Image 1 (tube, helix red, strand yellow):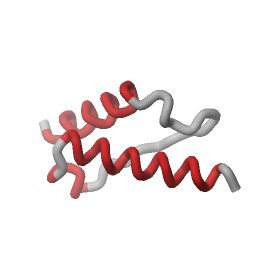
Image 2 (cartoon, helix red, strand yellow):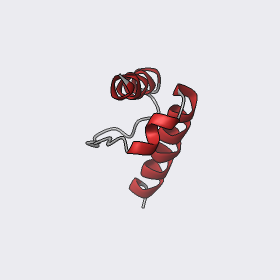
Image 3 (cartoon, helix red, strand yellow):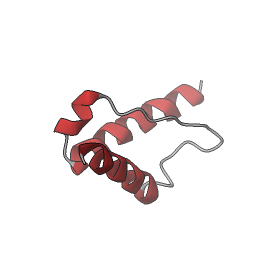
Image 4 (spheres, helix red, strand yellow):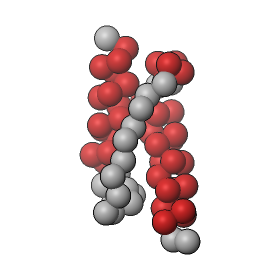
Length: 60
């Protein structure tokens, strides 16, 4: 049940953030145990921070 909630939150973030995702990049998201303690907003913030970091590293 928790696993499905986290998966839904991740999919929803990607759906809403299509413009923020680095194009031409394969992404693998692995939710660690600590993800179950996060709410949907926090999961989105974490993913947003990771995407910003990925975008920055691709510019180099």
